[in-house]
Image (tube, rainbow, N blue to C red):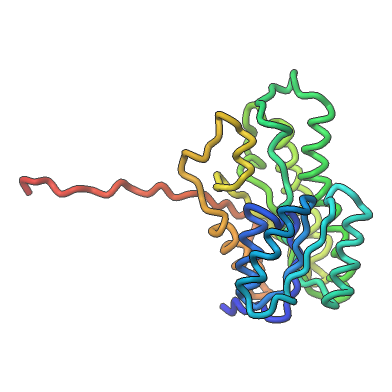
Amino acid sequence: MNKNLTDKVTIITGASSGIGKACANLLVNQGGKVVLVDINRVRLNETSEEIQKNVDNPANIFSLELNVCKEADMQEMAKQTLAKFGRIDCLIASAGILRIGNNLRTVTDTPLSEWEAIVQTNLTGTFLSNQAVLPAMSAQKEGDIVNISSVSGRQGRAFDAAYCASKFGIIGFSESLAEEVSAYGIRVQTILPDAVDTPLWDQNGPQSMRATVALPPERVAQLILHLITLPRDAFMLNTVIAPFKGRKKRTKDKNS
């Protein structure tokens, strides 16, 4: 399967860290043109500069400080990408938050403002970023969208009701959109990562799962590359990617 992305233009939201950053590094090194989108200007600049130092053509990197929660920002994202590169081939919607701060909250103790912030970033942000790229992809009669859900999008978890609800929502939204746009040659695929070693886990505070077995974000990026380079007559539905704990290496019995 051809993994070469020469002249392919990919927008990545949440691009300054975690899965988004890993995708940016991988896709640029496959010859792609990448638009880095993030709300954090400092981290965005650092990521952009870091990637540009390691590629043959730094002009293939374009960064935009924009907020996925704002409709005008997402429309600007599409507009500036088209002005810079002339097309939009792929969107990887990876912007997301786990919770506000590091405190675990029951549903009873969750303020409406926190619920709305999480759902707006994760679910509404996915909707707005997807919506913004559809006109260009429809005109091209081809495109790929990969939305990042979670294993928490198919099984709820205590103290993370807002996060789980948003990730369940991404799956339903993506399946619906996939049915709408397939006739235009646009594939919409969703991945459901299990534990991934990203800054997102720091929001668990003392309960952080960093110490447990977790995937490096680069492994998720490799899956996303596989999805967007599948032959055009195939797609993968709600793919789960999880760390493989494997079997402990057996030691030979001294008496054997």
